[in-house]
Amino acid sequence: MRLHRLDITAFGPFGASQSVDFDDLSAAGLFLLHGPTGAGKTSVLDAVCYALYGSVPGARQGGGQGMSLRSDHAAVGTRTEVRIELTVAGRRLEITRQPPWERPKLRGKGTTVDKAQTWLREYDAATRAWKDLSRSHQEIGEEVTQLLGMSREQFCQVVLLPQGDFARFLRADAEARGKLLGRLFDTRRFAEVEKRLAERRRATETQVREGDATLLADAHRMQQAAGDAMELPELAPGEPGLAEAVLGAAAVARGTARELLTIADCRLAAAESARAAAGHHLTDTRELDRLQRRFAEAWERAARLAERADAHRAAQERMERARKAEAVAPALELRDAADEEHRRAADAEAHARAPLPRALTDAGATGLAAAARRAAEELGGLESARRAERRLAELVDERAGLDRQERADDEVRQEAETWLADWESTRTGLQGRVDSAQEAATRAEQLAVQRDPARRRLEAARQRDRLTDDTEEARRRALASAEDAVEARAHWLDLKEQRLHGIAAELAAHLTDGTPCAVCGATEHPAPARKSAGHVDRDVEERALAAYQAADERRARAERHLGTVREALAAATAEAGDAPTARLAEEAEELEAAYARARAAASGLHPAQEELRRAEGEREQRVAAQ
Image (tube, rainbow, N blue to C red; front, side, top):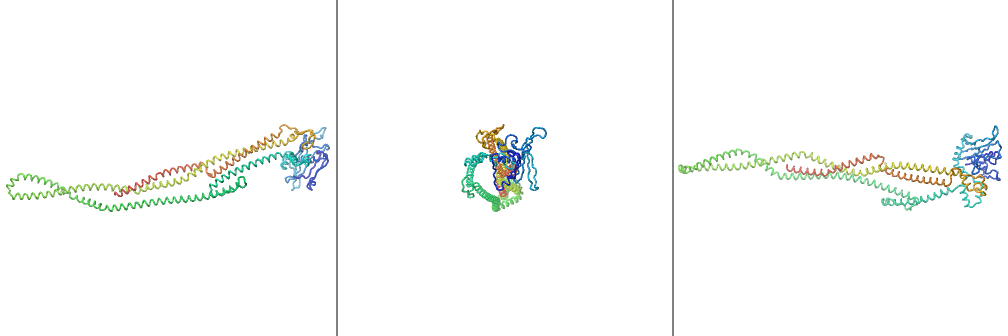
């Protein structure tokens, strides 16, 4: 702020108009107001304060709506007025104030009171003219307070040193000057603030050391896990740069771990690919081994068949002879006829032997010899017929056995041919079951690898949803606590402002006759200020300050809690992504169902392999039987 000009009319001891050109006075840098007591030195400063704030410092304000500011030496028709021209915040302003004025009535007798008037104008450098801004007391007061950054009480304490205290200040020692300055400028709150800041600094240093110790402990555990990938700084808890160094080392370790994880993933993928290739190679090798064993068994069966070829040919020759034996059927008839003839011959022989002595006697030796020859011939024919009969019976029995064996062999051959005709489809179906079960087993292994990540994502998504609600609730609590802190601070500032307005009453409570006033230095106190209704004292202000500090602490705790919840939410979101929880749950359920189906299908691998081996063994038996 820089003052340019001050015009005073009928103000204080000045009955007429007076002007003070501060530009001329401050041309050399400093200037001095001096004169005898009552010359108006303090009134010049009062006029500056009145022009800016509409009131004068401390007890000099009086209680008559500003009418005590009027000079007792002024003419009846001259109105009290103060006009100041100044530059503040880069703006050149002019403030004119007229306090309430009790003047004679223009008509009739008696007096009337004109209301206080205030004008605010600003100099426009472009047009080189003054521009009216406001005529409202409240607006002008708020504008000046905002531009200067000080209330009237603060302006009076900081800018205008109270009368009588300057000499005391010059004569006092260092300690007394400090006490005097503290009383003049009310530095107790600054001392309290300094004390509070020192306590907070010590508490913060303790928290920092504890946090650094915890951080170092975590860092040592990370170093044990990371090994040579992490190097910790040689700093003690509380030393500056420890957290940044640990975070940098952790970042390096995290980057190294990520690189190792990527390498491990690549190795795992390569191993899985190699395992899959090895599995396919193993399947192909097993199939080749099975075919080779079948080939070797086929060669063995072919060798056995070649060894049994002679027996087969002998059987075929026997079968052929049996077929040829069918030609001896007429011999059976001859046998029957020969039997009949034999019986007749036997009867005839018996009949002939009965009368033999007499015949022999009658025929003589010649007849008997002829009969004997005929009988011998007949007996020789009968013996040949009997041998032929016995051979024929043997051939008939042998043919019947060969027919039975042929029918049995035909049945076995037909059954083998029927079963072997469906072998390819049977083997294809069984091999398909084996392949399906192997694919299901492979699929089950792949799904088993995918289950844990899916479960973790689902759990992270559910935690993300819970933390989203917790974050919103924490945000509302933090906002409410911040609003409460703002309201508590506003209430404390209001009470402080009220106390500052009524500080004269507190100062007047310590006044005694004969003791100099701490503000003006006067030893007489004819009209000390009295406490008004609703006066705010120090205890009320301190309770409001304590309430504000408690509300601010609650706000800080709520904000810390909000930060913690947000960090947890960020971690859960990073794990789960932006996918909805319902969709992740469906994917996890589908994955579990697919894994269960694959496990169920894979459980049939061993039975299918056993059934295929049994079918191959049965085929080999049937081929051998064929």
